[in-house]
Image 1 (cartoon, rainbow over the protein chains, first blue to last red):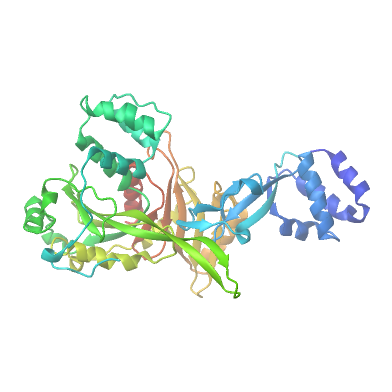
Image 2 (image 1 turned 90 degrees about the vertical axis):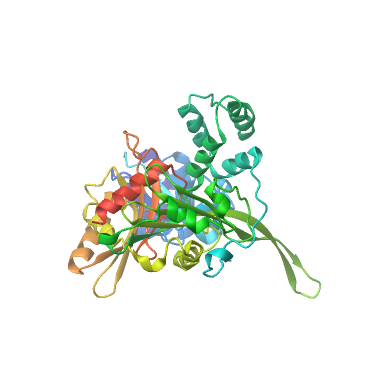
Length: 118
Length: 351
């Protein structure tokens, strides 16, 4: 993970300095992380959610974070992870409840992951 | 729709025409099993098994093998292996009156079937694809002393195909009906343990215990519901909780649901499909505190029995422990030996 990426982000989004610094600490903490967008927002307190989304997209492009699309069960928990929305099928089997489901938008969760290698 | 409890002579009043051709048997095997499973079956018999597709497997491996020693009974055994383990919600019962335990033997089975429409089952199984009503397709005593009864039924999945707007502002929806062949299986062990397995209703949320009375109806005269008591898995659920650390590496917990004496429910679910909730220290601490301070019991588990280096089980087996107190589900197809391993462990945990 490169601190240059975070410094560049601060230059681009000076209003979000504290959020970006908090993100940097989170990512470099050493433990693997798996967070939804909302969870990240709750941890880093951005002044703009839209800007946070742009920041996360840049960190995903730079490899500091990875992003997966998780299809979740009505019983909670992920059924399967996909790399992009295009890979998500229209129907699949929910092994958590043993039923076949239509994958509707409410079942999709964007998850940001950090490997924790610092 | 299941029929109500019937006297033996009125059982199975009608069914689709039985077809016993080689092609039908191969068709049923193809629908019930996987290429890998069939290849393992052929390899175990020292037969060529490589194939890039089902058509190649059937035309270039199985059919030639049938002309060189592979028998129809071998394929029937393969079909049993493929469709009788997994994709089911199983209800456990124990025969009442252990001291006077008498289980149906071959004579009892013969008396039950003789002079009924099912009498032909004395000579071997029926191959049924889409019977009109739930129909007994096999009754057999296996080498290990287990009495197995198979009931095949046709279910229908209804799916929306299209939606059309009407000029008057209304809209029309078109639905398709797709038949699904469901295999329900009942197994009676020599120690009096009875399994009643209901094929998964994948297309709808459902209480599976509602299907059990109809199975008793089909088996009336041979197995009577009053002779069997439900065997609840309460002890197994608690034992899994208590031994969760020791079971690490053998069982993966995807969800645990605890209830305390105040009626509060605490659910803990893994985020990803491959995670164990008890590898999360925070989840472990939270559930432990709730369990201890709330005098909680473990109500439900969502588990994976993980494949082991000794091949037992040979692949991971997904198990749901929930629903009725005596109910567990094996949601994916698995081999006979893997299913027996899971059942054996559940029985041990439930003592």
